[in-house]
Image (tube, rainbow, N blue to C red; front, side, top):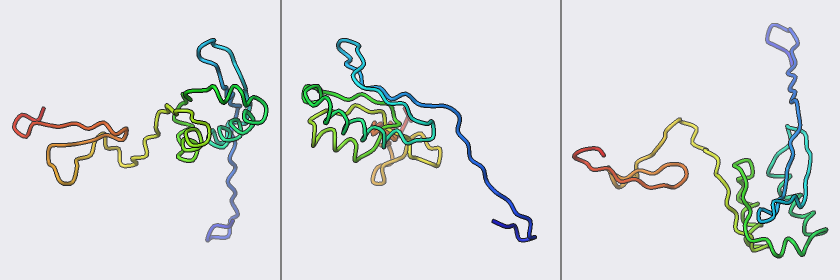
Length: 131
């Protein structure tokens, strides 16, 4: 790319490090499958790949799985649907805060004293005291 004054510029993006993705049997605290990726790779894409590899290599363990607990890096509608619809695994993921405006809660449009946060918790405030 070139600036308006004719001077060339470039943008260099680097990530340092790696991520370890683990699938663990929480009852016996034993690793079942692992994957090592560059730090810049998507957790969501790797989550899909690991489930597919488990289906190929460890289908019996996948059939017995009841829940998938993951951090918010794996918060993806398609991954959650795949877990439940295809494997009958209940996903228990923390969700990403997609509210970009910095709000902690938002008011319901039809009510002046009912608010909710990005996780879906609903709060009712007393109009007189504010508590």
